[in-house]
Length: 281
Image (cartoon, rainbow, N blue to C red; front, side, top):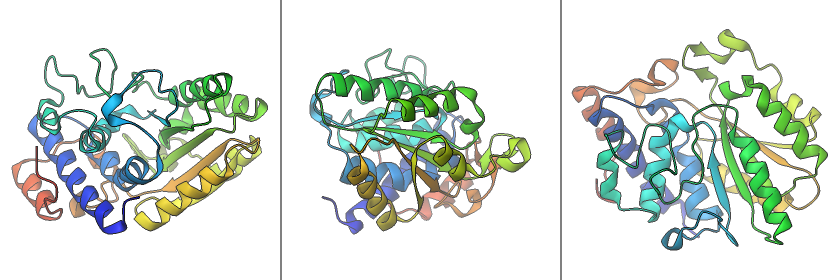
């Protein structure tokens, strides 16, 4: 188990990776990536049982993670690279021609840690449920995790999958929603209000936990609680409140940094706010 200080060091480095990747090709999605950094760092370094050195597509006898909101690929690439799935230096190829690290993750080029293409919003939960049921059929007691965006909750396929999971008692899945209240065109309230999101998921038969996604101790505690509730006949959802752009002051709390790259001076400022801890790529 990693201690909080070690996790904080990884978080700082991952934030550096995110802004550097997006800056180098003047393309990518820093806002949501920064907001989900604490979550993914905790998941991969403290909670999930996984094997970075021996990656396989079937993922037998290990926990699986699926990123549904694939546009936040920078944070996932950084966490995977720092966890040892592929060389850290490969992050320098982000969004370049013929790179394995495309803007939305894809398994086409055999990128370790990536099992599905994602980016067409609304699909990740369905895929994760299929993987979870496959584990049950294979007598594999490990868990399946999936991260979705809050704007993604406006997709109908999400609610079909939610209904399916409860009906079939898929209780080896832990889904998380990045609830930052912002999407590419504005706030979720302005674009299409989500209403009582917790109440809706509970009405669909899910056990719902809530957490501040930018507080490391709380994330670890909630993920462990979710894990303890698995296997009891009910799918589990974590409603995770985050701040878009968290950790970079001029990006925080606005949808404007959903898909905009920092310029040279902004990059310098962002890096100054997040000390190098594990070595830049």
